Length: 120
Image (cartoon, rainbow, N blue to C red; front, side):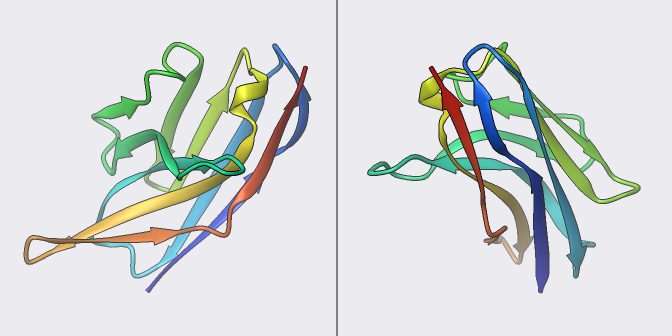
């Protein structure tokens, strides 16, 4: 099993910045992808950003490109999300995510989520 514990989140004004961090523990030796998803009220969960375990490749949702930066620390098994120029539409519960692949089958693991609220 994999445990993901998020920290950060809270209330920030539009245009401000906020950082999220996620610590992974447990059976993480074969995790190959980590990242963040978010879910706003009444909407489906959507990808925010992902990063490969070795940090070599990142992927961002178009809505957050050039504003958010994902990074990882393999020594500490953490993944972080720096969010700048926040907008009210960034308000959502943010979930840490990681993926393991075994025999060609992907399995996802999720954190408990942390609320990010951007006031206008």
